[in-house]
Length: 316
Ligand SMILES: C[S@@+](CC[C@H](N)C(=O)[O-])C[C@H]1O[C@@H](n2cnc3c(N)ncnc32)[C@H](O)[C@@H]1O
Image 1 (cartoon, rainbow, N blue to C red):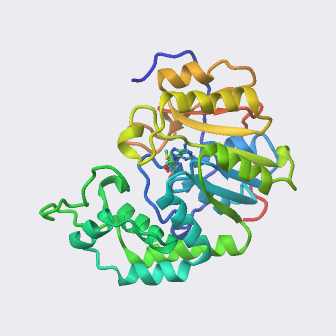
Image 2: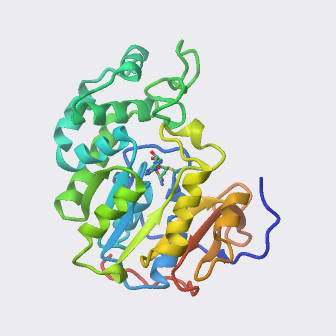
């Protein structure tokens, strides 16, 4: 439901620095936040010096972290997720990428293998990573858990076949890019656990930096669809606990993305020190440069309320 809300300032897009396809996430994610990158970039660069560490406790496909590294808006990132398959993927991609790439090449992309991986309960982290990659690239909408079937259906009678999102060459390049970032210390750590545990881990990892040099980016599961899209359920009580932490308990700086839902508005809008911005789209069917259209996505943040056009990147 789109709320009839009070005026929320729009965030215009930041400058669109060229993006390499190889810098994109190897994982597809329902509702990937890649399209919000220019707005997030604008919030960061308009407000604070380049963060030394960005912590993404609900990382999923990590499209924002990878995008911000690519445009050099942050120095390093910490990726965390509660889903053991997703966390295993990031762990293996950052440490054991050549194994993952070899294993990916060996996998026949067939409905039989899809069924195998759907039923498999891998005990090794390597095979959990492979299961994550295989199912993410071959299942409808990239949904790893739940009841979604293979792209093209079990009978493969659709125009789109199971392998249409599993192009191995480009995927190998994306995985190698992740490994390169980890080797350069720019993906500082990956972590499997709840957002609370990830924040404790990040506080430890960022102990040398101080709270003003790090930034959280949080993209929790959607309120309406949480139980359908992701393996990990996220209840109203979880959304409330997160809001209490962000708005009342932490000194850390944070940016949070949500769709505009009544519970979200209740939890964040008008809270002391919290600002919200509506993301506008220039590149949709309805919107263009002259007439951008407001989206449903809202960014909440405790950064000061003065987004300006971003500075030009120093390194690119
Ligand atoms: C909306 S998705 C993130 C998508 C990501 N921003 C992207 O662009 O690809 C939310 C993620 O949060 C994870 N998650 C769910 N409950 C969690 C919890 N309690 N703690 C940490 N992560 C959780 C899910 O496994 C899922 O990967």
